[in-house]
Length: 314
Ligand SMILES: Nc1ncnc2c1ncn2[C@@H]1O[C@H](COP(=O)(O)OP(=O)(O)OP(=O)(O)O)[C@@H](O)[C@H]1O
Ligand SMILES: [Mg+2]
Image 1 (spheres, rainbow, N blue to C red):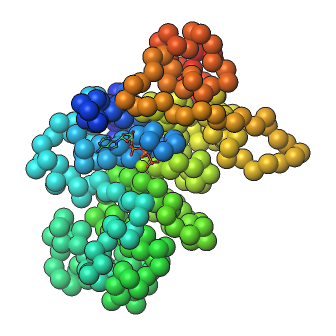
Image 2: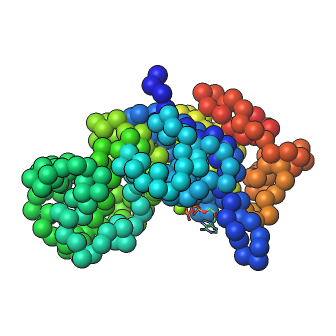
């Protein structure tokens, strides 16, 4: 098996909160991504998905743990040394409208990362921008348009073209289809699956929706209150989820099928505040299987099928 392009060990990220409190956004998260592999990161709003994505790309500085990118420890690399790495690690955001400068043509938007990171002459740069536009199925005619003339789906294709322009080794996709019309989401997912297959880049694909991750993810991490509840091959998450939280997310995701209806698990109550992290298992206040022991210590990940889950009741 090839060496991981990204290895994250025990990552922690705390933010200063209101009134001098501390927001514990990410609490000891570990995972690896290998070349060509896509890891899905799923969790409810506020579970720390975007913070993980931004921290592994060193757009944020971690509060603890270790980030190794392409064999190099980048945990506390100063910003000026992170900059040359940006060509190798790219991000696609949820909202393509705010990710693109509306005053620049599509051509200029796609050429921008090439200008910044690659030493190409004008003709080679133009040719590459045209090839990239075609790669994301935009067509050359789009190159002379401006963002206001494009649909959301087309704009997200421009963002994908920019993200792959420098042949990065790692791409973080933060809810890349969530702000798009339902009718164009499948097309963007298909494009990302094509790029995954041909580029060899490792991908971290963030979504609050398990269904979105199904097509593209090799492995899925289920996040709750900044901690990994379960980590398993994608097929196992869908066929045999181990953690009670994953089972609850799955049952919310499944369409009602009267012939084969697994017991519906309703997620009740609020997610606890990341300011006052509860002792023990973070999920216990909403878990139908919780017992007194769940409050004693935070459960570590233990083997569950071909993956791991953090639950003492397994
Ligand atoms: N810059 C910041 N300052 C203070 N708190 C922050 C900051 N960024 C994120 N947080 C907090 O960290 C926690 C995790 O936020 P994050 O945005 O990573 O969650 P998320 O899973 O991406 O949520 P969503 O699905 O809504 O995008 C939240 O409690 C959030 O309020
Ligand atoms: Mg987010």
